[in-house]
Amino acid sequence: MLRSLAVARSLRPLPTACVRRGLRHAHTTPGTSSVPDLNWDEFFRLRQQRRLWERLGALPCAMLGLCGGAAVFATLPVDPQQTFMGLDPLLLFGGCSLFSGALGFVIGPSVGRRWYRIISKDVAQALDKKEAEFFKHVKANRSDPSLSSASNPLPDFYGEKINSLQAYRRWLRKQREHERKGTFSLGAPKRK
Image (spheres, rainbow, N blue to C red):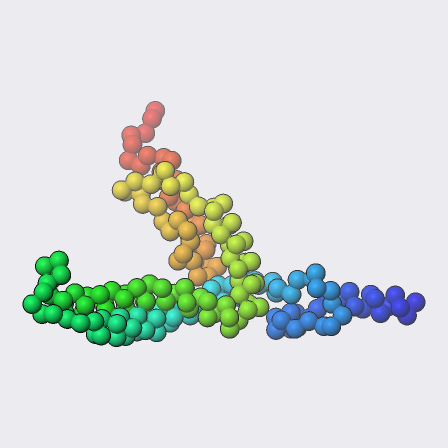
């Protein structure tokens, strides 16, 4: 009897505080998932936080690319008498340095996302799980793109601008309005 009580106690679900912190007891089985379930408000808040990390990751990467490109192109030998494809070498090297900074700025959001995943591993897994569910909702509820025209453009196809439940409801209304405008021709004479 005591042994069955001990087994029953060990099979109880973890408290949510332990799950959110990623803590597990020694007697839990490795097959149980420690990924916390997020509600929609937490999901949108964490999604905004991740986007902030992505934007902030772009700045140091851009500076690193610019400084790295300037360091590389500043050490190359320059002959002012010789042109490269009709351009002055200093102008070309300066343009290449700016291009390497722009490349760092483009790569920066990926680096910022990776930093976010490293710093908050337990939350990142839950965010990925909820984001897959969110994109299933977006895919199921978006309007048909073949109904778009110059006077009826397609609104936010991937749901990138959705950052709250209210924004999601607005997005749903815009999708239904787009579908309604595309299905019924506006301004057509009424049939009798």
